[in-house]
Image 1 (cartoon, rainbow, N blue to C red):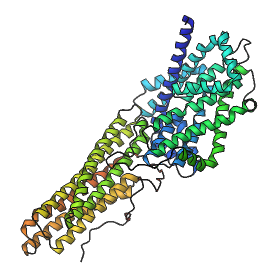
Image 2 (image 1 turned 60 degrees about the vertical axis):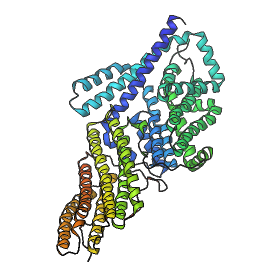
Image 3 (image 1 turned 90 degrees about the vertical axis):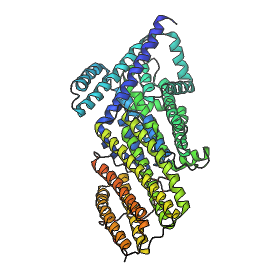
Image 4 (image 1 turned 180 degrees about the vertical axis):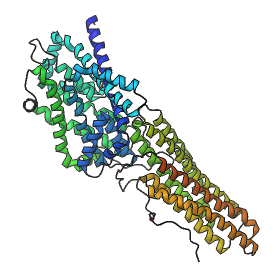
Length: 587
């Protein structure tokens, strides 16, 4: 390898590195600037496929990466927060959204790249006390850096115009479209960014041939490579599905099938497609307009492929289900269901998944409150054993969720508001875990009650029955407040907690009166008082959860429709009504 060739390769790789770094940094800046307003994008993730496509396109436009959006969709499918049909719609939209990068490159903003870098630098480093200005500065700086990388790649490719070997290779690509598809696929698999490889393709095509007017590759030579780039970008989804659920693997397969089918259709009509793209693109010398033509071809490929498959999403879902048969295995209760470390650097979405895991964790403790009541009042040893088993699961899930939240904090793209929200969620995790501890304590009291053969009076059992129900009820309200960011439910929890405190004092006095009247034995006092005190402590934990919900700075409420046939479905039980809760004693 000659020194000139080595210099060209290293310069090309350096420009590519600047481009990818600039694109990722710009994505982080967009996320910080957009903040929780991205919840309006997620709210589009409904059963309507068209809205799913729109949501995928908008997310990709903000994240500047179709791979990132696809990985998140696969993560949501794996967590049971999204159906396969919904994920396919989002993936289609992501393919459309990623075309914006190619369009930006075609505008020839590279002439002003260093100006953007300078302005962004000033805003980011000298006005960083104002967070919004700093985030905007990061976007502008990264935007300029992205085009600096493009300029570097363009300069590195200039010698290719005079290379006979390279020119012969380009002729081969034009004559054998499958070779171009293979080249594009391989490049994107290696780089794992179709935006980057398409940027390289646009720069290569914009390099003038010997006549100074024609592109060294031409549009008919660029199209197969472009199709290959679209196939290659699916590797990220495939990698993300490794170790994930069966539905996640099917979503990744749908992404591969979607892009592969588009290529298999288009590759037979390259001359006709080239004519269409030329007709809808600006006129002029080929070397001046081919970058725009490639961007338009990229958009045309993804839009038309989406239009073909959109009415047949159910068919596509059925095909990948047939290709990847089987049923989901039941996951252990102690294994996190929603935590996806592949999207940890997307704080808004990662926080949402962590909140869903905490909600699931809280529902496990709700089961524990019911079981502990059965164990205490009925002496049910099976219920006691289940509480102990679930308490171990709660401890493991709490540790996993706190570690996940701490990992989100360690990312560079987390905002101050998101940091505050994460801090509150970590405290919520601790309070939920404490609820499990109090249920365990009730079971231990139940064992002591059985050991000494304590038999409470009918009146005492009735009071305990209502007390335990009160504990379960306040916990249901706390779960609703956490899961739905429901401020009304949070306020109700605070009112109920005051009632629980008053009720504990009242029940103590009533028990002492029974002791005085000799209708209850003094020996029962400690166990009785400790039992109602554990319920009061559960109320304290619920109060802390409610206060955390109220203090979280505009927590993103993500309205993703949870499929009814998944474990993520809300618990089917009585829904908390909107009346003020009050404790009433049975007559």
